[in-house]
Amino acid sequence: MEKGSLSINSENLLPIIKKWLYSDTDIFLRELVSNGCDAVNKLKKLVTMGEAEDKGAYKITVSLDKENKTITVSDNGIGMTADEIKEYINQIAFSGANSFIEKYKDQIGGENDIIGHFGLGFYSAFMVAERVEIDSLSYVEGAKPAHWSCDGGIEFELDEGVRTERGTDIILHISEESKEFLNPYKLKEILTKYCYFMPVEIYFEDLDEQRKEAAEAATEEIKEGSEGVTEAEEKKHEPVNDVSPLWLKNPGDCTDEEYKSFYHKVFTDFNDPLFWIHLNMDYPFKIKGILYFPKLKRELDAIEGQVKLYNNQVFIADNIKEVIPEFLLLLKGTIDCPDLPLNVSRSFLQNDGYVGKISKYIVKKVADKLNSLFKKDREAYETNWEDINTFIKYGCLRDKDFYEKVKGSLIYRSINGGYKTLNEYLEANEAKTEKKVFYVSDEKQQAQYVSMFKENDLEAVVLDNQIDVPYVNYMEMYNEGVQFLRIDSDVNEVLKSGDADKDTADKLEKLFKDVLGKESLTVKVEKLKADNVSAMIELSEQSRRMMEMSKLYGFGGDMPMAETLILNADNNVIKLLLGLDENDKENIELVVKQVYDLAAMSHRPLSAEELTDFLDRSNKVLALACEKSEK
Image 1 (cartoon, one colour):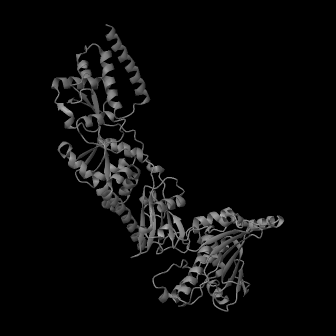
Image 2 (cartoon, helix red, strand yellow):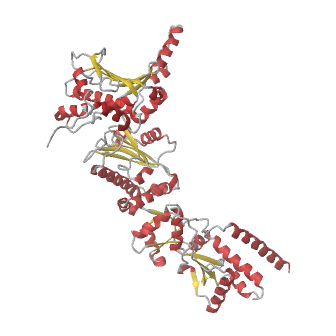
Image 3 (tube, rainbow, N blue to C red):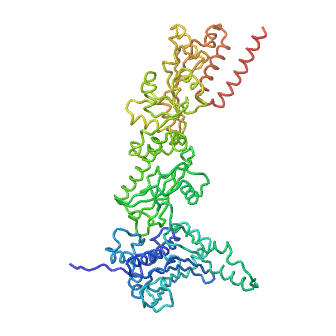
C-alpha cells in the first residue's frame, strides 16, 4: 500500500480558474474592488486596535488607460510586503482575509466585515488580462515597496517596487480578446452593477480623457480671476458608489421620503412603492434589507420583480430563489446577508440548511407586515388590495406556511362596496347561503346576475383575476365545508318566488329542448322574483373550473360545458310564448332561440356565428313589434 499527498499543478489550475470559476467575465472588477475594500477595512481595524496610524480619506480608484490598454485598481489600505505577496498571491487559494481574521479574532470578536474568504478573487484578473502587475507598500513603518508581475502562467517576477504611499495597485494589461473592457462606459456599468453599495468610496478615472483635458487647458490662456473649480469638475470627483445604503440605518431613523428616494434610485421606477418592509436582524443570523411592494400589474405573467442580494454590501445576484422564495420575487428590494454560504465564485449559494432559515425569516417578516397593516390601518390596506392581492394570492398558492400566517388578513371586494374577510362574509350571509361564497369573475358580463343579487340583498365578492381560477380551489381545500360558486352557477332559493305549475313546466321544458336541440342542456322552470328576467343559465361550477384550469395551463379548453337553462314562469315573454299558436313554428323558434341567447349573453360572449344569428333575429323581433303597433 502506498500513501501520499495530493499535489496541485498551478499550471493546470490557473486556466481552470480563468475559464470556469466565474460565470460572468465582468466579475473580475467586483473581485478586485472587493479586495481593495478588504485592504482598507483591515487597516481600519488595525487603527482601532492602535496598531496602525489613521491617515483617513480611505478610497479605491479604478483607472482606465485605453492608450496603454490597462485597467488599474488602487487602494490606500493595508498594503503588502514582498513576503506577504509570496504568501497570499503566489499560494493559490490561500486567503489573506482568513489569515487576518484568525490572527486578530480576539480583538475583532463577532464583528467581521471582511469580504474575501477563498483567496481566489485576485486570479479573476487573468480572465481579461494577458499580464497582471502588483505595486504595493505595506502600512508597516519602514516597509519597502514591492512589485510583482505574472503573465498568467506559473512564472512570476518579484522585486522592489516604486510605490511611495501605503496601499496596493493592481495593474491589468488587457488582452485583445477582452478589449471591450477598455470602454469607460462599460467599466462604469460594471461598477454600478456590482460595487454601487461597497463600504469604501470608489472613484473612476479615465486617463485618456484627463490627458485630453490637460492638453486643451495647456493651449488656452489661463484667465486671471478664475472662478476656480466648476460644478462639472466637482461632480467628476464624486464617488461612483454609496457607502451607506439605506438598509444599514435603523428603521426608526428612516423617513418615508428616504425610502421612496432609495427605491427610485435603485430600481429606476418612477412610481412610488405602495409600502415597504425594513429587515434588520442580528441574531441568530445577520440580515438587513428593504423589500418594496410596487404597483403590480393584474396579469401574473407580466409581473417581474427584482430582489438584489448582497454579501457585506457586495452585489451577488438578482432573484436567488434559495434565499428569496419564488413568490417574493414579485417584489423589489435589496437584502444584505453577510452569513450567506456562498460558493467560491460568490455567484451561487452552497446548499445549506442555514439558507432555509433565512428564507423562512423573510417570509415571516412579509406576513407580519401584511397582518400589521390589516389590523392597524385596514382602510389603507383595503386601498392597496387591488395592487397587492395578486402577489398575496400567489404567495398563498406557493407557500402553505405563508398562507397560514396571512389567512386572517385575506379580504374580498364585495359587489355592494367595501371589503370582507372570508369569516365576515360567512357570518353576514349564513342564514341565506350557509357556507356558500358567491363570486363574480366579470362584473360587466355577469351584470344581470349581479343586479338580481343586489335587489335581493344577497352578497357576492369579485374574483376577476387570472390567478383566482386556482385560488378558489385552494381556499376550498383549506376551509372545510366552504364552497365557492360563481354567481351564475346556482340560482339561490332567495331569488325564487315559488314553484311553477307542473304542466306549464313540462310544456316549456319540452319546447326548449326540441327547438334548441342541445344534448348537454338541462331545462328547468322556476318562478323568479325578478319578473323582468325571462331566463338565466346555470353553469356547472366544477366543469367550468376544469375548462378554465385547462386553458390556464395550456391544455385546450374546448370541452362541452354542462348548462342548465332556468326559465322564469312569471316573465311576460315566457307567458306570451305559451300563448302562441302551436302551428306558428317560425315565431316560436324565433322567441325560444332569442330567450336562450339573451340568457347566454349574461355569462359569456356569443361566438361570431351565434352573434350573427342573434342580430338577425333581433331585427325580425323589431319588425314584428312594429307590425303589431301599426295594427
